[in-house]
Image 1 (cartoon, helix red, strand yellow):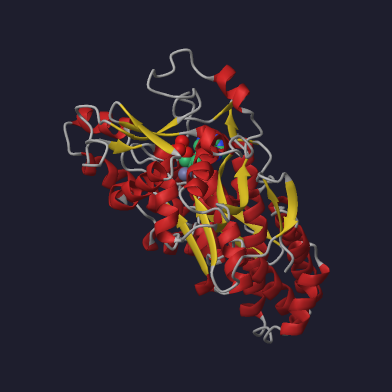
Image 2: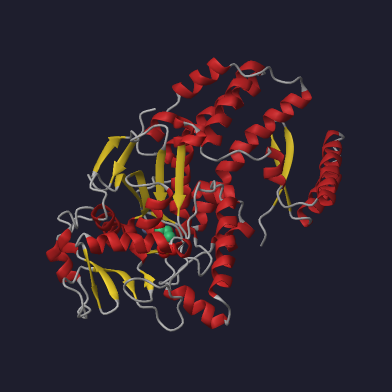
Length: 477
Ligand code: AMP
Ligand code: ZN
């Protein structure tokens, strides 16, 4: 594998090589748990899940350590708990559980580590202490602040100069800051917020130091890959890198920095603060998680992605086509005899002949990789039509190997089409489909139409394919 990844810091696409192939480390900034995640939040989760899967395939499952944190101290969490009149942990436990369930529905594997800020407090305080001791941070009015002048490379990740930052700083720069760009490492808590004892007085950490301390604790610094959305480059990642390096990691913070583009909705970035959000929690009631995953990966991860009904409908149709071919292959097997085992060499050749791997190696071009699945599916379709069992078996194995690598086509094809139907309903529909086939064979067209109407009334869509009819439940209205 020659995986080339675009690195935001050097602004180049470089061949990825971990510092230690037996211990590949990746960190992605995770959610602040005070509400359900929207589909924009799910974009980095799904994108970096693809990278996690590729790294596991390349270096071995146990060799890849992936950490993604949970921010469970925040003004918005405290406000929500206050509003509901419950303890903060009631809010954070509820939304963390929902987040993990929703992301699992999108096919995202659980990261190796999911550290919480509240459980990393000793490490956070220790890191701030080191920064103060080294003169890279100072204490003023109950705050500990990072001294941006102490890090000559400050601004390098985002391409901003300190002068730009002064110009961009809000008018009311806190009077205790030595420089307008200096940022908070520790601050006094507001009355409703949780508070911890520290050498700088009771309070709580700033957001940036939480990530640095959690990386240091779970993975150790420097790491191979740090990821997140574009919006985190400045100030969050700029600050993470500055304080991490100054806290004693002169050899660097992250060897690659990867950032995904925004998911836009109605011409604007989808964001909780703008209020233009579509929650994953709601979407998964209407659309299979796998189709949402497809929609998130159909564009290149660095490009903006426009979230529309059409995008979701097309994703669903694409999966219908792929599962349709798999379902036809299964029926060809039940009608005839089972396919022989796939020939591993032939499968390897088929994958090599396609652009699937080279697309992913080119900075995770999932758009092209997904389109290559159709090349393999078309090969399977042609083999079925020609009755070539070995060729069909090889194409099916190649298709599944590639699709599974990206977290697709793991479902049973019939379950894909019939998802949501309970066993009684399923049996009734299967009976009606059979009766309709019998009516058509007997050329009893009015009976066939009557059965079709009955199926329509059950919200069933009959899909007539080259190998016979299958069905699925229509989307809920
Ligand atoms: P937040 O909960 O806002 O801190 O965001 C969690 C993650 O989602 C971060 O990596 C953000 O960069 C990412 N994110 C938030 N909104 C969007 C969006 N509209 N498009 C892509 N990524 C986003
Ligand atoms: Zn972070």
